[in-house]
Image: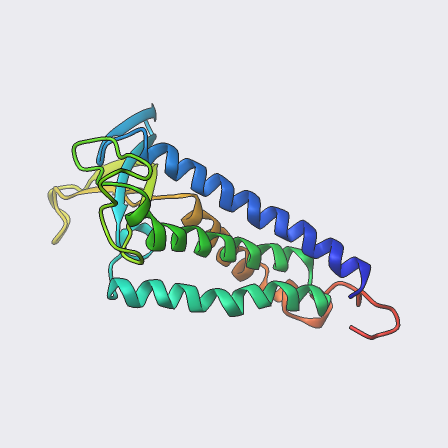
Length: 214
């Protein structure tokens, strides 16, 4: 393997590991420091609000819990390979970083789903304990994802004369999420915004090996 490829793999691995560590540390601090639904006001538009969800990003629930967890684990394989592939084929490094963010975010939430039910007891009405004597709140693979970032940036009330929505309130942004969710969204949006640059021959970096063996 070319030296340049190894260096880029190391760089992107550090980025992914950093995201994963920040995600897990923030979740463990919240889980062991706050009761479920407790919140801390940082500013009038940013709160730390502790919620748990068994579903997908931002609390969306569409599939069976076990199916969702196994699907996430299976999805990590092609995503992980994609990191190596994009480096080997000389894709723009920004594209590889975006894939790594998606990988790290997915892995961060997988850790919650697989292990948190065993590692922690319930947070309902109490602060959870790490490795409690009486066991965790759920079996392996049935843990809940810890969310805590809440940004109610603004709230509006529609005028009474508006059809169907008169006097209704709308708050932006209601979903509570975590660092892992953010990493996945940033990675996906980054690829979408720059796909023309990243996925065309003109957007690739020069081949990493001048002799063409990559």
